[in-house]
Image (tube, rainbow, N blue to C red; front, side):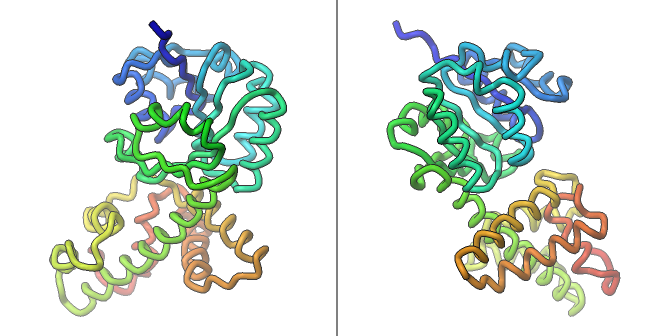
Amino acid sequence: MEAPMQVSILGTGLMGSPMAIRLRRAGYPLTVWNRTSGKTAPAVEAGARFAATAAEAVAGADVVLVILENGPVVERVLFEDGVAGALAPGAVLVDMSSISPEAARLHHDRLAALGVAHLDAPVSGGPGGAEDGTLAIMVGGEEATFAKARDLLGVMGRPTLVGPPGSGQLAKLCSQILSATAIGALSEVFVLARRYGADPAMVRQALRGGFAESRVLEVHGDRMLRRDFEPGGHVRTFVKDLRTAMTIAQGQNLSLPLAELAYDLFARFERSGGGDSDISGLLQQTEGGSVPSL
């Protein structure tokens, strides 16, 4: 009988924790590490093994999932905290963080030189999608590596191999642009409805199922109506991704006016103190104190 795949997760925050719990429920032997060790508690309670250091966590792992805050943090953990050197040749590292495509390609090449396979596989769907196993998982890398990790990723959502290294991160940036423009438009729709005297909740209900239907209308529309701005996705992280998308567009001599406007709106919200809000909190800026709160 083939030995079960040994899996490690580096990062058990808003996304990593529910992903770890799903993997344990699916029967995968799992080791977890997080810089703030207390955040590993839910995964450990689900049967995961706690590791005191990132390097300890990946020792002997067949597949390592990384879901950390940003590119510099991923770089530091992989190449300064001893993870790359502790990975066994033949292991697969799946970076599910949101970092730049260029950084993903560089990490791929540096790990390949050590005999370690790499996929960039950022996700969309928020903590709820991580809990339900319905994440959109956008993957960049080689087909053979994707084949090794596909079933494991399938426990957490719907993995799609987009293209070569870095392609998963590019797809995530496209997702962020679409989400940003939709959330901005939705906040304006709700403010317009309220100003005209219509009930925003009933407007949303009327739109459901038509061409305006979307996960943004479903999930973030509900959050806006309930004024629940506790972060499922932080504005500061969203702005970081949009900034990366704008940099790439500029490098390609592309003008993306809607994306630029959405970036400006969210960047202004972050500067005004909204960085720790959920992205649906943009509604507060759109209201601008000029209309009654929803």
